[in-house]
Image 1: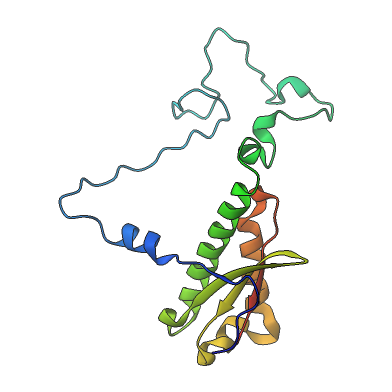
Image 2: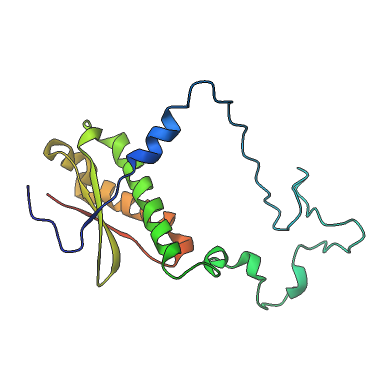
Length: 174
C-alpha cells in the first residue's frame, strides 16, 4: 500500500448509505419533501408566487426593491447566504462531505468494482483535495480518453461545493 500524504483523512460515507438503503422494519414510509422555492418565509401554497399576505403590494416585474437598476440584491439571493451565520469552517466541511458523496456516487456508476473505491481528503495550496483510489483495472475507466471523464467528474464535484466558497479538487492516486 503506498504511503498516505500528510494530513490524509479517510471519509466514511457508508454510514449514511446504510441508513438510507435499509429502512427499519415497521418504520413508517417517509413522505416526500416539499420545497418552498419562492424565496419568502411563508409556507409554499403551490402556485409559484410569493406567499406573503395579500394586503402587501406585489412587484409585477419581480425585480424587488432594486428595481431595474443594478443595485444590490437581497441576502436571500446571495450565493453563500446560508453559511454566513455558521461557525467558520463548518460550511467548508459540509461542502467537502457533499463533494465526497457526489464523487463516490459518480465513480460507483463507472467502475466494475465499487467496493474498491476509497476516498480521502487533504489540503494543499489549492485548497481542499479529495483523493480517489480505485482498483487498477478501473483507473482507465475513471480517467477516460484524454482525461475527459475525470475532467467532467472534477467539474461536477466543484459544482457541488459552490455555496461553500471553497473549490474542492479531485486527484486520482495509485
